[in-house]
Image 1 (cartoon, one colour):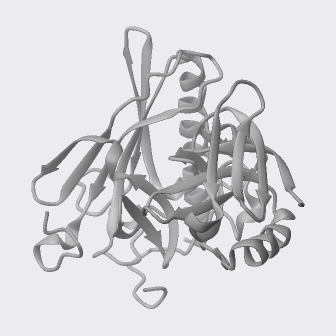
Image 2: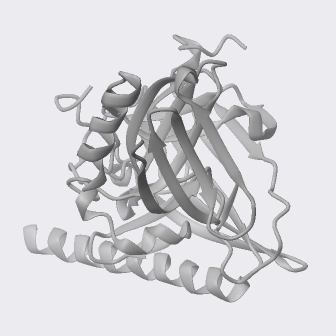
Length: 136
Length: 182
């Protein structure tokens, strides 16, 4: 359901208002970090699926010979790590995506994406922290 | 006899670009280079959907044998013309499938034939083809992982990023389940 059951500290956020706002770059079926909308757009079987940075916990990388694996880890309930108030709860009984892993032979591109996501996360966290300090 | 042609159309998830043609006898896609072709007879065409995907808009066609074909690369402006042609030639309505762009990682999973759909606020966020699941795992009753068979594409710097695994956290499974008795 929508609305009503917002958990403690959960603030409503949204990547895009509609399909027209999707960036052009998603067309090449590759991961795209959209700083402007604070989102990471993942290619999932032909769909361009945005994930707001608030839903992302971190990224990890794994190199195996010529292949690089990039895993995007998401905020979900029931995790020990992370502050509770940062977990986006709307409906705690919903199904959550916990992680999605991609492979590529272009390791340096995955390095760049990993850095972009980490930087965006830091930027947003910093801004949140500043907002909290202002409110105190 | 009139044929309407749309250029810059992809078949399935293939990187090959081609032409898509519609006539009273049916529809067909043909690669711009090479001999790849997909043809659908008018009498076999049962339904059609219009969906926003990564490569612009997708025309999804359901066939008599319950299989379906997808064609990406249509632009928003093609919708009305396409809807009109499908109605005129095959008497079918082009239905729009609503897609979520909210950016949330929570929702509801729904088994729809050969696909597992992930819905956010009752709109489709994505679909996973269950036929391509190579392995699945359940850990601690609340975590489900799906591994996908990797396509044997030629390695290329411009290749799409390939999803190899997705993990779900399903906290509600102990109390209620939806289509998950398997």
